[in-house]
Length: 201
Image (tube, rainbow, N blue to C red):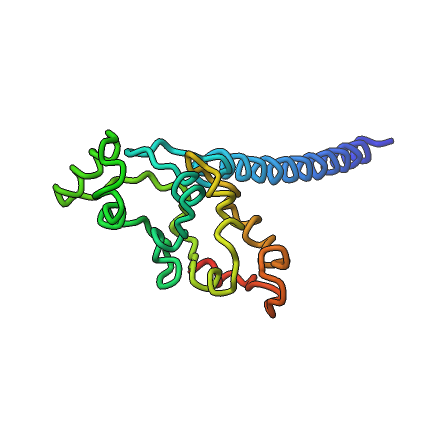
């Protein structure tokens, strides 16, 4: 084998090694970027997107007592569910409809009374909160007959309100694709919208 032949052999070997190395680096790079995106996305999600989130509230409030034992309907306090995108929290005045005369000796009710008399609002910690880029409207869900408990869990059994289901996209899509369990019997709805603009506007 002559020197030029030997040189061509080395060139081919080097070219093959370089191509293999390049393929490995590209595949490893894509995998690394993908893993990084998924890991960062998962780890940095706010805790209120995860199940079990139950922040401490400024005034202790038991849904088990109010919605459970006393059977106060959800929409009495969360009146926005039927007329706006947001369910909302009740105004202090709504609480005082009962607590002007009920349990007035309790420290928490006395605190609520002072807040009411000052004209301030209660700084409730939000339990169910979606990212700003997500559009959600309670109205179509409520008018379709979906019970509050479907998404919010057994609220009437919760002394401390906690998040029942994940607020990640997969949970919403799962129900939109197969809403039969969430809807009342005899509903004509077969599927919810799945196109991007339904929830991202």
